[in-house]
Image (cartoon, rainbow, N blue to C red; front, side, top):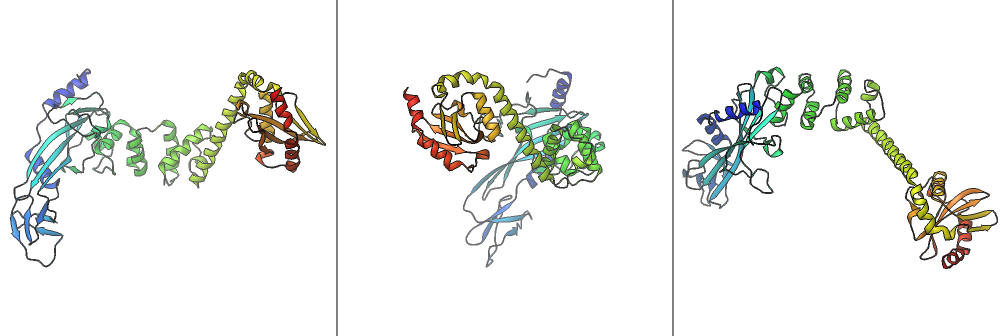
Length: 425
């Protein structure tokens, strides 16, 4: 990417003047990035993977570790027959250039051949430059097209990248050069060397870009700091509720759940400056209650939307089922009639409190819906299959059988031929 802004041009210029990795930094990487081992043969002959020295230890057991008598390194005993081992690990040097915090990520290569001294090399793959305001600029090698995000093209040049925050560049190296340099701004904002199981870049960016994160770190709210440093979003509403909860020494045992709960409070227009709401004694219970309430609200909204659109289906329903309109089956105090409009489906569903409308039974071409009344009061809703001429469903309120269920079902089955006649007619 060609630098465009003045700050990009400045960083490109500074990157070109950046000194190569020093010999002490290399020695630290070669010493600490790989666990040295001793290859043990069956006769008790050991070979150091680092200096290639061989010696014999006639022990009656196989030890876990031995010490090389030549280089003095403590070695883990390896009994494999493999003769060559190649490793690649990430290694990071943290430094300061002018006012920028710089993280230099290297790949350290270790080539171990049994009987030969170890061969080491190192290659810089990524530089992350953070401005005093926490904006990231990334220099990196090209990446090969692959399923793996860290397949670097080691023959390419370090260049300014157009996607500086791509996840492939957020390297959390296990091995960090201990003599790190950090800007005065980071020290002022509370950084004391600890990263709390986060990458250095994540911590640096959080502390430089948001003074709320600085406040969380300085007041010891580590769980909150870790959560919002990764999320990279701390809205004003959440921050308002956080301050109230921290002031009342609330235990944030599940930060993600608490944040979801606060968003639900905001949705229902609750006062998030009131500790009664933001510091619930049973967070899971309150969160579940509001989730259920929001779900019910969404169901009602969808139902209302369907009601508003129901007129669009009236003509289609009339064309499909008008041949059955006017059909009434009566016996004693039981009266069964066909639902003759989508509006009647709405009324039936609301009175019986079931899904005859919400599940859009009026769209089913192969079923006929009837309403059974006893003494003029709706008692059950009936679904008849127009393919098999059988009653598929017959339920009252809440999809439960009414006291008249057996009588209604008997009347319906005795007169189902009337529906067949309407179909033939």
